[in-house]
Every structure is written in structure tokens, then in C-alpha cells.
Image (cartoon, each protein chain N blue to C red):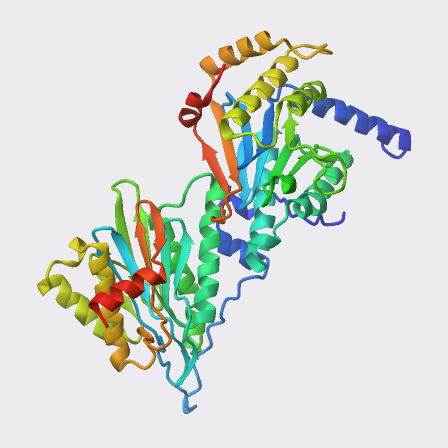
Length: 274
Length: 259
């Protein structure tokens, strides 16, 4: 009997709602083969973590603010100055990325479809823990590529959990997929040491702790932090004063995701940073 | 048995009769295109009958839950894979139904030693403009009926699905005269409720040449709504979001009922 074009088998993958598994079964998702250990004496280039960018996120009075600069680099070259590294995954979730864009954007696509696929097949929303874990699993599956020196991704995940206790939640990851929940702030990318310093300082000795900041104050601190990171890190774009290119800033709250318009960011920048 | 052609035809006819009998008690589903999108509606079911398939596609189905699930999963799987590898705008209901679901249902139906799909489905895809809304009804034998959005013919901005052909035709006759494409949600919702009631009443009578009286429809509607819940979903035309499907709760809809 001829095989039908639609495989509606008894073991359809929809039963588990696992989209990456479905993609793999159709050969649409590459997985790296972990290379065997090199022979003794073979010169081997060590793995260099390249996460050339700066991403930061912190909780403030209106939810979680996630900000990222716009610069994309290849080695010493700036290849693009309008990259969007703060990606919306669903109505309440943001994934912000530091690392190799090709892998990161692919991961974001897989993740976005995974959440939707789960909801559509299982007729219920995936839990926040499930979503956090899904990203962790993608990172883990990608680790073979990381070991080969291509495709490292170190993301931040921000979401709003309406169940059981409504609150904004923020997670950061390492390249192997370990997930850590951040209580106040998280930063990733090559410019993150400077940013982490600023956020720690502001949270402890600033005018008020981060979680009490108003939206304008939060935007101001995000812009100052990115500008500081850009000051010493060549891979971070910061704010391009001449080209008028501002970082991407998004806010996750109970109502969903808001992308701040450039005019608003420009106004705060002019008033408190420039 | 099926070496002889007429035996095969007989087997198919028996099978058709059997499936029709199985589907006959299926409670109706109405899908109505209006100004701001497409409304799917049914009343009082123990299990869910209206489903999200993809960003702009929804499905309503009657039949055996096991078969509905398999077809629903297949549709979601196909649409999601297409949306992932190409883009969400490349996912098309016409292709999904014509190239994938219909052939599978036809061959399952005609292979008399295997089980057919005990299901009848109604799909809708919301367009940028009301003229682009597409409705497709797929029968257990793979037969497809469209509202005419694909080819130039008199197009309808609604579709109905019911246990019997008679019931469906009564619903369609009602909607053809009572439903206007530029109506708002409240009017559309009430038309859908009336269409459902007409379909549901017709299911219980063997011979309904004439459409039921208006007063009788209202009475039937009230009686049913007193004990059963409304299940409904919208495909919104609002282009600002990617995902247009939104289910509507019974609580949200009750205040919109007009007698």
C-alpha cells in the first residue's frame, strides 16, 4: 500500500506536544554530532566564548524591562547596526540573546513554534516552568555545536506568570542550558560585567531599589548601563548618537509585551543620559 | 468479496450508510464571517468541538473523538511545520485541505478493509478582507465543499456543519437570508445561535421541508441555553497580531443574547 502524504499514524507526535521532536523526525532540525576527543599531540584551538553584545534585564514597578544594543559583529568588524536581539516568543515571553545570531534566531523560532504547538495540540497553555525548561533543552541540544566553536548562545528569558501567583519572572542561562532564576536583574554578553556592576550598585545604593523604579527611571538606567558597556566593549553598540540608533527596549507585564517607541527612548535619553 | 466491482460499490454504499448513521446525532456548528472576523459557534457539548489549528485557521468537527483528534493533530502538525520552515503567511487552508487531508480521508474511506474516519469537519481561514475569508467543509469521504472563495462563483460568508444533510441545508437557507457580512459581533452571534437552533431542531424531525417557525426557534433556543453552555471562538481580522484565534467563554457571550 502506498504511503499516504499525511502520516496520521497511531504514534503521532502531537500526543506529546513536542515540536522539536516533530522537527527532528522530519529532518528539519539539525543536531550536532559531538566530536570524539582529539588525538594526543594534535594542536587544537580552544573554545573561545564569543558573545559579543550586551543584553540586560531587570524587574521594576511595571514588570520586567529587557534591553539590548543593536550592534552585530564578526571579529573586529561591525556587520550590522540595527540588529534586534530582544525577541518576542509569545504574548508574555521575551528571549534576549547574546551569541551567534543564526543559532539564536533559529532557537527563538523553534521556541515560538513549540509553545504554540503545545497549546494547539494539548489544548492548554504551557506552564512557565515548562517554557523555561524548553529553552534549556534547546541549549543543551545545541551544546555539540558550541563545543565545535560555532553556535554558542547565552540567552535571558523574561515572562509573566499569571498562575498561581501573578508576577514577572526572569531567567538567565549558561551555554550548556543550566537555568537560573534572577531575583532582581540579569545581564549577558561581552559587555555584561560593566552592566552587572551598575545594576548591583543601583539596586543596593541607588536612589531606590530597581523593583521600585518607574518606567522612565528604569529606561534611563537601562540606557546609562548600555552606554557604559559600550564605552569599553567594542562589540556593544550602546546608543549611536550620530546615527540616532537607540537600543531595543521591551517591557513584559500582566497586559503582555510593550515595545517602547524610539521617540520615547530618545526623549528619556536626551533628558537623563546625553 | 470486493473482487467484483459491484460488490465494492455495495460495500462503499453500506459504509456510507453506516457512517451517516453514526454522524447523524452530531450537534450543529455554525461559522459566520463578519466585519471583524469569523465566529465559530455551537451549544451545549460535553467535549470541545471548536479548535485552533494555526494563526489564521480554526476547525469545528463532529464525529468520533478519536478520529477527530487524529485529523486535528495531523492538520496542526502540517500547518506548524510549514509555518516553521517557510513562514506563517505560507500556511494556507486551501493547500492543507485539498492536498493533505482530503486524499487521506478518501483513501481511508474507500479501502473497505480498513477503518474510515468517522468525522465531518468545518475549517475557516480569516482573510485580510471579508471577501477573502475561506470556509471549507470536509466530509468523511474526502469530499470538499467551499464557500466559493477559491473560484469565481457566488460566494457565501458563512458555513454550517451538522449531523444530517437536511439539518445543514436548513441552517444554510436561514443564514443565506438572515446573515449580513457587515454585521457586528452581537448581531452575528445571535444569527449563529438561531442557525444552531434551527439545525438542532431539524435533527430531531425526520421530515422538515419547511423551516421551523420563528417563535418555535426562540423557544427551542431558550430551552437549550437554560441547561447547556455556549462554545464559541473567533478568528479576528485585526492584523496587528499574528495569532487570530481566541476562544470566547460562555460567561462573556451570555450578555449578548437578544430575544
